[in-house]
Image (cartoon, rainbow, N blue to C red; front, side, top):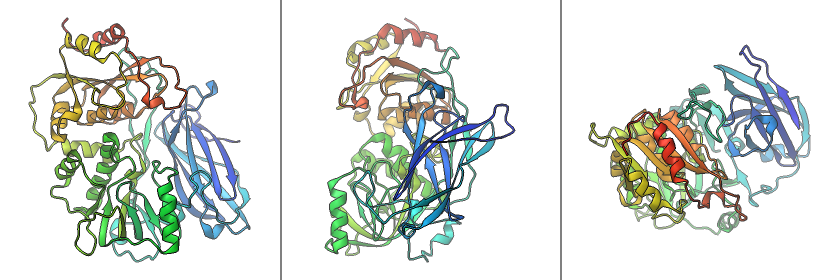
Length: 496
């Protein structure tokens, strides 16, 4: 384990604890900083004195240990490019950067001399992996990348500082939220990757870069048989695919059927490209459900869709793209929403009319979900009706209707689930009350509330861990009287 302490002019001395483990292919580890339990940290990688990568420690994993005051660790990993896996000694310098008390803090680990072995498959996935840091990574103006001059994949970082976006909100009594220690959220600049001559699975967003492997900026790629089979066929030259000649914008991930990830990752990625490039190029999407098509029309109008060169509809799931743009939002940054996400919500909110005098109280039902969560939902809904709440099933409403519903709300209650992402469409100051289980304290809606200016309250039910490890699928009973007690403490007028 490698520990380091940074020095800064802040009132309290910033610190960071880092553990790094090396292997023949690169390194991985975790970092805990004093900036807050959910504040992402960036790692600058220098090998032999040259900057090789900027990688983000933002893979949320609960870290057990009272000595960290409830902070969680953030995982990171880096696979050394093939040309450095030559069995020779290389000097590795790692510098970790985060923001605390308005100051940018850097923590540099001691210089390490490492020997990296021959190219091998990714130790976890079982197939070759290509990440952004495996190819050219250069700060540049996006307009310059339109020439696509480089024969290799290029990732372009629009210039912009690491920035804080909000201070945390507390619970209705002013106490630190249960399960979420005091934290500040830090975001980083958008990245757009410009890839040349790659293959894409439209249904999953899997991108295959010839000679490198599968593109894995996303946390949502899995050790799937399909990916390994695709790579084997491509290596043998036995994979035919329709060709898309013009530039296309990737608008798909393996989580594209999930409403939360569609909004926070895919719509945000399309919107990011629009903000920086103007009207987006044709979109490369999975087969669209009606609400997904409606959301794209609302965001970019009559969007064009990428079509193979023969003019046929892209019925083939695997296509070959001569030029592909991949926004960093597709990497699953919904846990740390940034200004792209807030601007996305503001843009969509401004395109749907509503009754400005409405003060709706919304209880989100999950009775249409495969994961209903609340076992006594009918009892809870009846109790909430006495407080003026209406029970809504979001899956029965169009995309625009959901936006209108949340624009007109003064308080929203619901169990942790994708539908709460609509909180981004609420008027700032609206109360979001999230019902959560103790075995799955995902902070994404806590972060979203803070970024979008909502007031947030948390109701936690104690739930034992599942033997199968599927904590997100746990169902539980809500203590109705305790939840009603929380509502009575909100600065809103409730009449029984």
